[in-house]
Image (cartoon, rainbow, N blue to C red; front, side, top):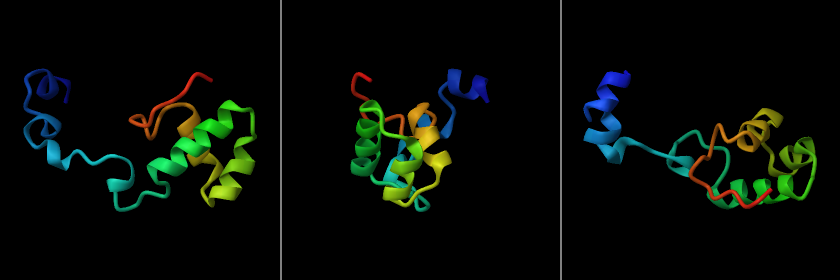
Length: 79
């Protein structure tokens, strides 16, 4: 895996059009706009469970978003 990336042979380098992110993914539950909204609300101190409920996603989705595990390409303001 790492060797492929280092040598530029990984599909993200050879076929960047296949490296889908965010709402480009067919199973995406959020849009970039909703991910940004959730991050803003988290930064203001709103509880993740309340954000998840209002956006109709799971608490784990909001948690992964908060920790930067998903939607890494969405700008995160100063929290």
